[in-house]
Length: 397
Ligand SMILES: Cc1ncc(COP(=O)(O)O)c(C=O)c1O
Image (cartoon, rainbow, N blue to C red; front, side, top):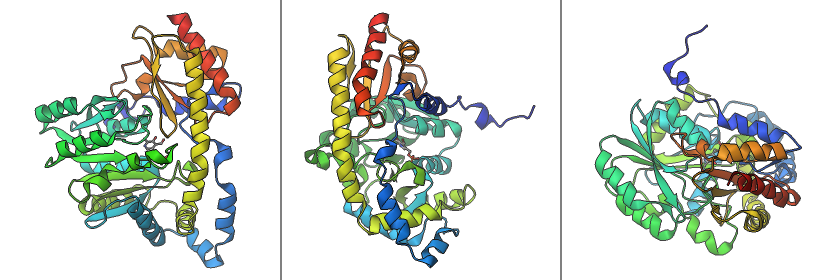
């Protein structure tokens, strides 16, 4: 057999691929996939944008583009990000092949094997996989309903300052925890980070997807609050505000970091799809984003409410869960003696799926938790699916 690299030997079999399989069986009510439902995609807008392209624009769309991005998209993206308060004075912007590539690029340019990355617990499975693929050491700090535990973070920073290279946080409608950082927690965090040498990777795929307009002020990015004062690397994506099939994300970060990311990207994929960048530029510059996400918000809010009502009706005492104000996810904590994998096996036998909590533990251990996504499940199946999972838990109690 071939001899694999040390990097690849360290990779766990992909939980994400397992999730995708769970969602493929139409007889299973799945809360597993953190993705939008197909029927919610803006296909009419897509038709309009494509049909509105001139012949020469269509030719450009089939051509390579510069590694940092299709220049008109970089401009329209800059205007959009500035409207969210993000700074641009000493920052560079690069278009990436999904938010996932932005996380991967940053890890590649900043992390040597053995460097320490501090994450939240729980944390996004794709980021954990990227960090591990560069042989980073991971340590995680628990989230509560308002964000990361600042005291524990401070202790970790004080005791391991010289090893820490990066802090990875996702402050808005967290995947998988479903929570949003409070304004106080954000302020305390920025105060704690002031003067530190390591980077904060702020991952923000869901910030636009608040349910209630009153909560919009909570979605101001940490990088917007910090301005130019901290080395924050801000990652975003079109995945949840247009479609993940575009495979387009971005990284806004201090210029020297972006320069290195550009070099790293050249050898990875040369450029992200020009075809989808042309469409994304039309989407932003013709003002299609705002009405589209405005239409999504009440739909996701309704799905979340159906899920929360079903949890309330069916879950036994001892089970708790987060109450999302946006995004796609509810995070459920089981009594400590109950193993999420056993719940999943029983639920699957009855036709309901979710993702076990250990997938979101950087150490892959803690498993008295599970993630439910409400974004993708038909509304008339939510109550039944939650009922199946609740019965499985009751059997194990
Ligand atoms: C927290 C988080 N970060 C990044 C991503 C990656 O997004 P993309 O599909 O743009 O690669 C996702 C996708 O689910 C996510 O939930």
